[in-house]
Amino acid sequence: MKTVLVLKGSARKDSVSSLVSDKFTESAGEKFNIKTYNAYKLNPKPCYGCGACGKEKKCINRDLDEFFADFEQADYFVISTPVYNSSVPSPLKAIVDRFQLYYAQRFEYGIKPPVAKHKKAALIISAGSNGEGREEIEKMFRRQFTVLNTALEATVFVDSTDTKPITEESLKEAREKGKIFFK
Ligand SMILES: Cc1cc2nc3c(=O)[nH]c(=O)nc-3n(C[C@H](O)[C@H](O)[C@H](O)COP(=O)(O)O)c2cc1C
Image (cartoon, rainbow, N blue to C red):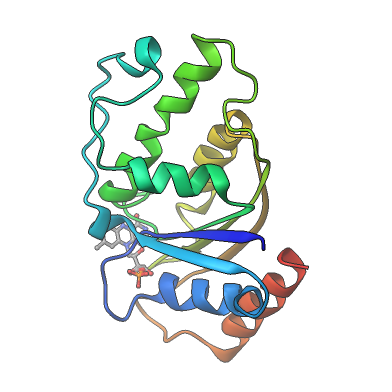
């Protein structure tokens, strides 16, 4: 059975990005295994830039071992995140930086691709204001995915969440995009 790895970037109980992510993955729930992580609960250590992963193919910190094992096995990778200062909240950013492990395997050991299984990825982004941040976040992940044998194939973006409640239309869009993504 195919597997879906979901990584949620918000700590909020009534998180918009989390709700939209659930709508997006609704159709996958019927046919695939879904495993969900929350970046805040993972509480990842930041990348120290120590270079150990370039020498030993593993990080000196072991707190993300299970997450990375699931990432390597996944067929689909869905990341949901709020925009924080034109980027992602710091626990999610720490995970982004910890993917350095695979950069080291690619560029210091010449392993191409450093992640054997190809993945289709989707981004779910919510922003309090009008659209600022989407481009920066997409750019960051798109660039990182080129090394991770992962292709960004869908983005769902919801804006103005600090002034307007989420609409049925946005939730429907997420469901519909999810159906196409998980076909
Ligand atoms: C620390 C912090 C920084 C934020 N920075 C931005 C920002 O740069 N641009 C923006 O549009 N919204 C910003 N917001 C608002 C959130 O992106 C918005 O409330 C988001 O929809 C929350 O998503 P969630 O409900 O999934 O947590 C910020 C919120 C916080 C708490």
